[in-house]
Amino acid sequence: MKTDLSIFELISDASLVVQIVMGLLVLASLMSWALIIVKTGKLKKSRREAEHFETRFWSGISLSALHAELSEKPNHHGLERIFYDGFREYKRDLKQASTSSNFQLNRIDGVQRAMRITSSKEVDGLEQNLAFLATVGSTSPYVGLFGTVWGIMNSFISLGKMQQATLAVVAPGIAEALIATAIGLFAAIPAVIAYNRFNDHIDRLVVNYDNFREEFTALLERHDAARQAKP
Image (cartoon, rainbow, N blue to C red; front, side):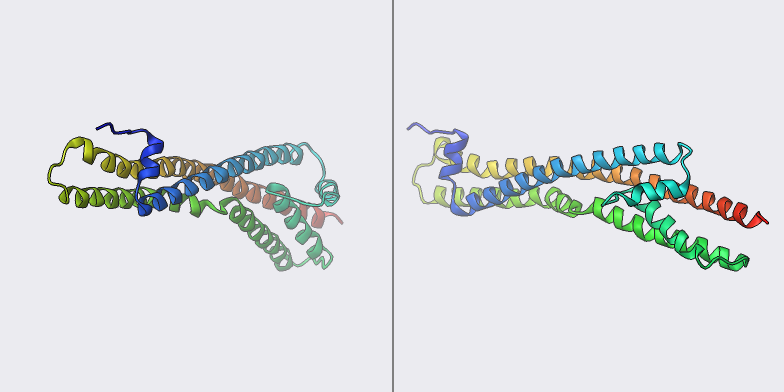
């Protein structure tokens, strides 16, 4: 008796439940890889934009000129958006200028609040769909294991109905069941690696955003103090 143990033959000969499990795992893997490619490009772009803006911000350009320059752009992202929203809030409050120190503190607090909200929105956008990678990474091995258990169970049920059983008879059923576990690991491992890597990149960007907010706030405070010191 000749038994074909090629991968494609084993998959096509698997039971319906095992084939459904394999199909779901393959679909999850494809979706994970699509998300990994898109998210990798987005994070690289965010880092480049942050570096470019910081270079421009510390080049000596005035805050008003930089804000006017950004006003001509239709969309802002990352540090650009944090600066733009913060300085816009500062200019809005400056129209109600007062020599009161309490008003000055309130104005800085308003700027900080605007930048925190914008920063949270930016981070939320960067973290979008990461939960899917975490779900695929944590559940795929168990889904694959379910397919394996189901396939082996069917193999032993079929084995019990035979008067004479040999390894050649049992091997294909067990092999096709183990493929489900292999596919589950193939889906889970890249998802886990990508999830951890993306989280590390996002954490670095969050630190960058937080540092910029503190530096920009200190700059505005000095700008405010210098403006009020003028006669």
